[in-house]
Image (cartoon, rainbow, N blue to C red; front, side):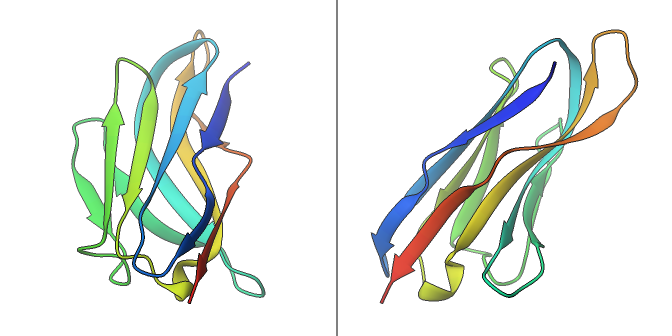
Length: 120
């Protein structure tokens, strides 16, 4: 059974930094794209950033220059370094991965979510 487990959320003051981690575990044959989404109260879930298996990245305009996504393929882990945080970054952050479990086809997997709260 494949699982994504996130860690690293918390409370930080505006201008501060946080680093999120998301580790995939289980019987994994291959991981394609990985990404971070977020959902603020009363809003739809939005895509924050993606990274391909080859390391190509893409960012939402709202986080460009402040957030950095990276991944360690050997550890099946994706990271999100968040700098210069703003109150509007407050949300539940979800990890996503496109994974092919051993012996099966590709499927979408989601983490349980981790709360990030930025105080002004």
